[in-house]
Image (cartoon, rainbow, N blue to C red; front, side, top):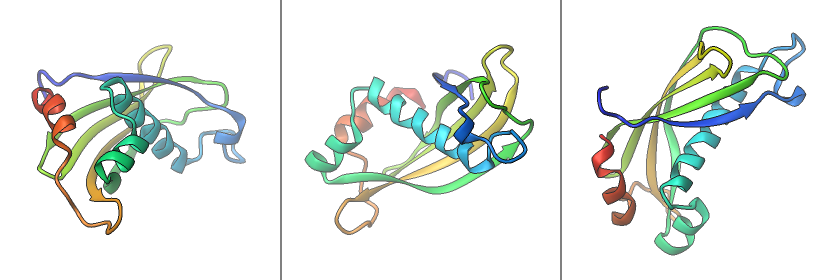
Length: 139
């Protein structure tokens, strides 16, 4: 999508991230993407624990579509991208890629839909206005 800002977060593959074959275990790509989205929020000035305490909201993955293209291995330096591609009143959709830092080759591609939920009831609620207004121009 044109004009969408891309946030990049560096990740190093540790031994604990790999399986018996010496490659990153598939579920860990989702962890890398989660960390990058948390850092994306942080660089916008929002901490998830503060959003829960002050606004009474939390974010949960509603849908994850992931395409694994090539394996990452122990000690690889990676970059995880975050691009907000659409937003609704109570949801955000991100395009995320996990790339090798050395050459930018995409190892894993994901499209992740996040729901904004009431922290007590886990029912959908609108994204807090302060955050919504900051991301308004990103899509």
